[in-house]
View (cartoon, helix red, strand yellow):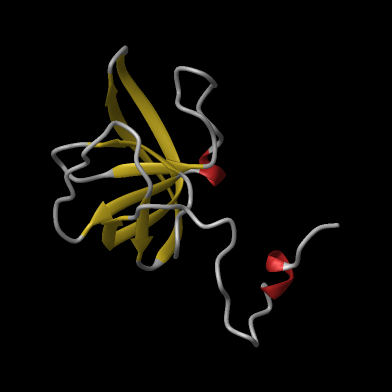
Length: 114
């Protein structure tokens, strides 16, 4: 899985939530089917509050509730998916598209819109 979304938090327990929206201070929490709970295989220390990362691992469906500690208090976040033992790495840029294999059923996602 390649997550091109905003990582909204990463704690000392090494869990973070990815979603495709702006930070929580700007918009409400998205529904669980838009949130992925990521647990890195080894701790990942963020250099900034918001930074692009690459997340690689097995995406598993399943509802899970977790506490998210943010500046304005504690929030309960319900995720619809999890990635356990994920490889998390910093990336300098976020691509507009993801290169897919030639035979991928998702190749239509990379077609340019006119």
